[in-house]
Image (cartoon, rainbow, N blue to C red; front, side):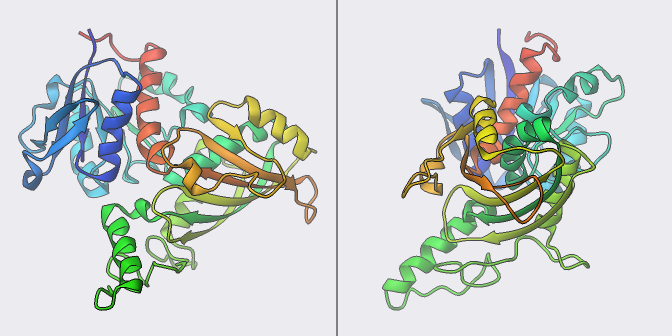
Length: 346
């Protein structure tokens, strides 16, 4: 017998991707329920070769669910995740609502999946597990094996984030503005983004904070410390770019101990979730187009950063809807099952 799974926010970009990945990976589910807000009740979504009709979040009985993949935004998660968890289901939340709660683990399975052992052994747990920010997830997958080897002191990262990170509205706005450049009368003023996104770059994701960083940049800094090591210093600049899917990152890393580009390449080629494409020739690197639809975190252009002692620079690319969100959530559920941290399916 398999598990009973609910996807909350099933009509969104990430919710649909969760359903697709569950089917692709043959997740051991006997029942899969698509859950959405009342206005989306009856909307059909795909699950493998099946079609599911969305059910009403407010009317659904979560006491019969083993695992809930939550992708309905922070406000919904704050209200509903504790309720669902109290019914006995394990909630794996994709929003930022629980990432910084000291009683909720923030998990990337390849990096710190072991923290689930202690969490699931607790009697007073909230039954909530947090998924990190999409840009954080791909970075820590690539950097954790190097941290284990040479101990990271400082990370400087600049992100190039696709519009799918802002949801379907972001993708629609890029498409409409791009068409408007070529079809007179179809110009579209910015609505989802602060400035025009077509043929442009916007160094502003989420709200500005008092220190001048944006909330997206703060997320990367705080989450990297929680997932990998609180002693690591991190500074980030997050930029929205006119790409539909997949985030890119230019990362400079300073280590406590010596590490060469050759050593880093060798380590990353063996690291779970990583794929090195670094030929040092035209086209010998990965771009968002190649990463879209793929599970791996790609690392290219690994080279020495001679401006600091024990420094490396690299280029990291990953599909933000998959490893940055849906895939990571499904992998967390798989870890719970593989490590026998959940009750056996009824």
